[in-house]
Length: 330
Image (tube, rainbow, N blue to C red):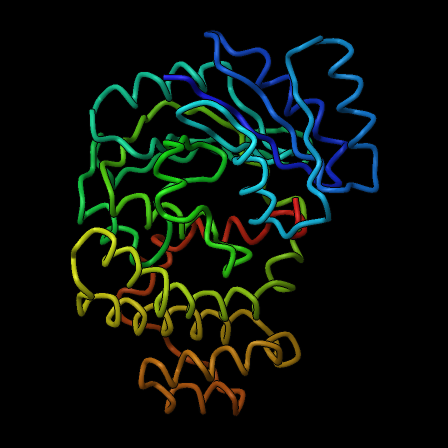
C-alpha cells in the first residue's frame, strides 16, 4: 500500500506548520506529502517554504491555475498524488503519529476495501482535546449495500480520518463538485457502492472544530440546498453504481431528514437567522411532499421533530460538525 497524503491549503497559515509536521512525524513510512496552496493571501506560502527548507525533499508544493472551491481543491491535490491510496488532511487538522500505520493495518482487513475510516479527536483552535469520536454503530468491515444504506442520514466518518483507493476516486468521477460543503459524505456514498468500507477504532487524527462558532449559521442555507442535491442526485447515483436500483428508503430518508432540519432550525434560529433558508426548505418540502410543514415554518412557528429526533440528530452530527469548519475554499 502506497499511501499519499494531500493537504488542501487556503488561508490557514497559522495552523499549517503544525499540520505538516504531524504528517512528517509518522511512526511508519508513507509515500509522499503534497500541499496545494489554493492562492492563499496569508502566511501559507511562507510556512510551506520554511517546512521545505527544514525537511528537504519531503513536501511537494502544487498550485492550481486559479483559486478553486473547497471540493475542487480536494480534487486538484488528489490529481497530483501518485500513491494507490490517498488521504486528504485539511490544513488545520493533525495526523496522530499512528495515522499511516493504523490506515495500513485496516486496509489489509479486506481485499475489497475501497475506503478506510478511523476514529478521531475533536480539538479546538489551541489544539486542546475536546473529546474522542468513535463510530460505535459500524463494523470493522462493512459491505455493500449496507455501506450506502448506513449513510442515508449523514456521513459515517470524518474528513480528517480517512483513506481512499485512488482508482475508486477516479472511477466515481472524483469528489462531486456539485456540493461545496459535504463533498466528503458524497464520496463516501459513491465509493461505498463499489466495495467494502473498513473501520479502525484507533484514534488517528485531530479534527479542528468549534473555533468559528458562527460559521454553522452562516452556511445553513447552503447546507439545506445541498441536502436536497444529496437525496435527488448523489444517493440515487450511488445506488445505481452499486447495482442496487433506486430503493424507496432514499425518499424516506429525505423526508425524515427534512423534518429533523426544519425542526432544529425553527427551534434554534431566530426569525432573522432563518430567513435565508426559506427558499431551500421550500424546495426540499416540495420534493418530499411536506409543504404543510414548511408553511408553518414560513409563518414563524416552532416545528416539533419526529419521535426519534434525538437518534436522527446523532446520525447527522458529523455534518453539523463539518459546517463549523473555516471558510469554503481550503
